[in-house]
Image (cartoon, rainbow, N blue to C red):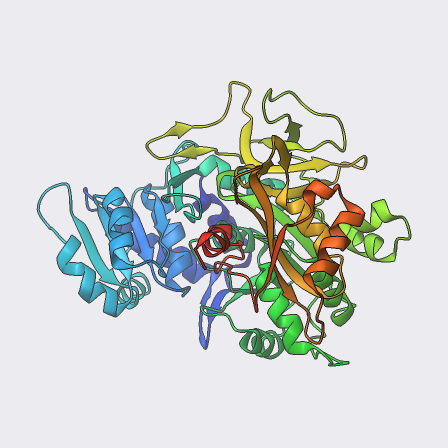
Length: 510
C-alpha cells in the first residue's frame, strides 16, 4: 500500500485531466506523477529522511506529498503561522531532512539549520525551487519503485497544540490508503467537477483532500488564503462543484451573502464542513442560501486519518423538515460512523460502554485509525480502540453527538458538567450566534460555570435573560453564574475554538 499507487491509477486512467490548479498555473495528473518521480530522485541522496514544507498551499504541495511517498520518507507540513522559535522545536524533530519554504523564511532559516556535513543537516530550499526541479523538462524520475510496505510512514502531522506542546501524529501508508479506499469511489468525479480547497496543508483535512481528489479524479482549485469574498468569487469563476470549509469560514460566507436572493453559485452541488462545532443557526441559514446544495458534516481527527463519521445530505434535509425534535436535533450531530469504523461511548472512570443516550468518552476503531505519536508509540489499546478524548453520546438512531474535549469538563461541587451541553442550550436562544462555556475557580464549589457569548446583530439579550433560559432547560447548577458579551470568540485557522484563550481572559484579574 502506498499513496503513489493511487496516483499511478489516476495518471493511467485520466492523465490529461487537470489535477491541481493555483491561479493560472495547473498540473495534470500525468504531470503530477512525473513531477513526483523527479522530486523522489532528488530526495534519494542517501541522507534525507524527511521532507518538510513550511508554506501556504501551492502546486508544490501535492508534488511533495507524492514525491515523499515515492522516495519512502515521511512528509511533514508545518504550520506557517508559528513563530521561528516555535518552528525550531518542530524542525529539530525532522533531522536529517529537507525543508521547503518561502523565499523570506528560507533566507532566515537557512543559516540556522543547513549543515551539509553529518546526520543533523536540514537543507533549506524554496517552494519555487522545488517546483522548478520537479517540473523541469527532461527531469529523470527515481529509478527505484516506491515501497508497498503498509507500515511505512506517509505523513507526520503536528497537532495544533491548543492543550499543550504539538506532537507529531504518525500516519502510515496503510492508514491513509485505507481511508481513501473506504470512503472514495475511484474515478467517481465527472471530468468537469472542481473542488475548492481552502484548508491549510498542515491540517488533516488538507492531506486527506489531496489524496481523495486524486483517487476520484476531481480538479482541485487551491485557495492559499481564505476570505469570504475571495471564496465566493473563486467558486463562481471556477464553476466549483464541491467545497470543504471549517465552521468559521461558512459563518463568514453566510454573513457575506446575507440578504441576497440569488447567491450566484449554480454549480455548487456539495459543501462539506468540519473541524469544529457548527452553530445550528449557521448551518440552517446556509441551507436556505444554498437550497440546491448537498451539505455534509465530516467528523474526524488527525489521529484517525480524517473522517470517521458523516452527517450526509439526506440527514440534513430530514432534520430541517422534521417536526420530531429528536430528528430535528440531529442537524447538530456528526452523523453516523463510516462503514469501516466502529464507535464506542464509554464511562469516563471505568471505560465500560454506556447505554444509548448516555454521555461518555468516544472510542473509535478501524484500519484507518493510527492513534500513534512519534516518540510516544501507539495509544491504541489491546483491541485496537483509540480514545479520542472527545465527549459525546449516540442516540437511538446511531447518530453521534459531540460535546467537546473531556479535558474541558467542568467539575462543580463534585458534579461533572459538559460545556457543550450548556452551549447548545444557549445557542437555541434567538439572540445569540456563538457561545463558549468554561469553568472558572470558585472557593465554594471548586469551579463555577462561566459563559462568553456573541449576540446576533440587532439583538440585546441580558445576562438575567440568558441565565433564566438555561435554568428553564437544564438543572439550575448548570446555569452560568457569569456571562460576558464579546464581539467574537477566538478560533484558530482550522475552526477550533480556543477555550484556553477564553479561560485565560476570564481568569485575569479585573
